[in-house]
Amino acid sequence: MSQHDSPIIVGLDIGTTKIAAIAGRKNEFGKLEILGFGRANSNGVQHGQVLNIDQTIKAIQQALENCQKSNPDLDISEVYVGIAGHHIKSLQTRGDMVRQDAENEIQAWEIEQLINNQRKTFIPAGDQIIDVIPQEFYVDNNPNVKEPVGVNGVKVGANFLILTGDRNAIRNINRSVERSGLSTKDLVLQPLASASAVMSDIDLEAGVAILDIGGGTSDLAVFYDGILKHTAVIPFGGENITNDIRMGLGVLKSQAEAMKVQFGSALSDEAKANAFVTIPGLKGMPAKEISVKNLAAIIQARMSEILDFVTYHLKQVGLETRMLNGGVILTGGGSQLKHLIQLTEYITGLNARIGLPNEHLAPNHIDELKKPMYSTCIGLILKGYNDYEQNYKVFAETFKKVEVPKSLTVEANAFTPTAQKTTTSVAPATTLTAAQIEKRKSKFWDRFKNNLIEIFSEEEDKLLP
Image 1 (spheres, rainbow, N blue to C red):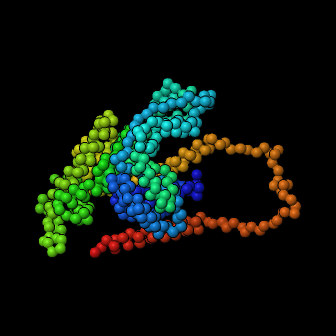
Image 2 (cartoon, rainbow, N blue to C red):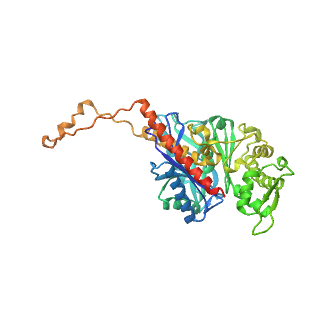
Image 3 (spheres, helix red, strand yellow):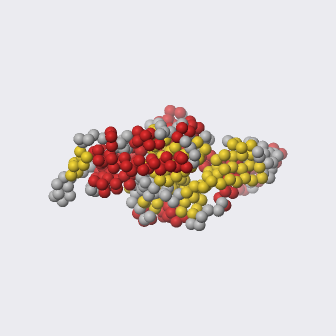
């Protein structure tokens, strides 16, 4: 599949603190080239759920407008949307089917049918199935079949992880997207999107826990032996830390957020005892001095609570700490806290590192796109490409190429009446040299990067007093 044939896929991350829209396309090396990028502050979302649809629509439209500014040639109509929130649940099921054509090998469309059959599973009233993820396959009496396509057998089945969410919460997301002039191509669980952006095949084999610390929630995905074993949404995130600072130190929310980002630490022992931050007083009141060590103690208390949830979920699925050789990968905006890696290793007993979406991005992009807060959005694009490639594979297997026998081939002119024959002059096609093509590409990327840099410089100017 050439780069020209690759579709442009757009990921839309509707978060508690920000809404991001990123458009990308895979190049000939299988890396993502970002063709458009826009973001906006999010006001109508709390703990990952859309509560105020009108405010969410305005934020989505603002993000799309910024995306169009970065690349005016983009035409965005379909998006892959991330979903999170404490209403997300998962359940384990097992399903199988007897094949109609047992003489031939298992085809991709049969596996697709097996997965679709699980969407008829009974779930509690008010919930809706978001995704069905196959785990271990088995064919006849052979368990743990990694890739069933191409295997011969009478019966094929698998263990499944079914992800569900509240029907009203899903409806609010779809309604916000549709009223913004877009259509939802698919809803993707945010921890799975983040995992695909920051995780490599080596991590998948070694076993790893992905913790995406967002604004309203922290999303967990656990992989072991190449299989998604567990997902969970922890109802605490960066906004909770900010509110803790605001209440504990008696400052404004904007001041709490600024202190968290500039002076915050996840380990109070690492903070200097004699360091203070001066906060201007309100309406003539005296300035307030905040101890950096007290600030770190507040942050550590909330982060420890989030990491305790991670330990609890790992024990719940029977994965001892020594079994996850890949450790914990921290991503999302909250992962940028100082000394968070040390705190994670201390509480979970696992090695930890920051997960960046650099591995799947083509080089020569601005540094802003390589931050962990955009892992979900880039993962949504990768999920879209995975769907596209899977559907292309199933389509190719289902509809074989039809060849017309030479004996039935006739010239098209034989069916054209002489009176209706017309001669159309066609301009010769222009052939571009390799140097001309490379020159055009470089001009396009330079224009796109300059547009992005201008947008971020404008935002920085607005933030300056």
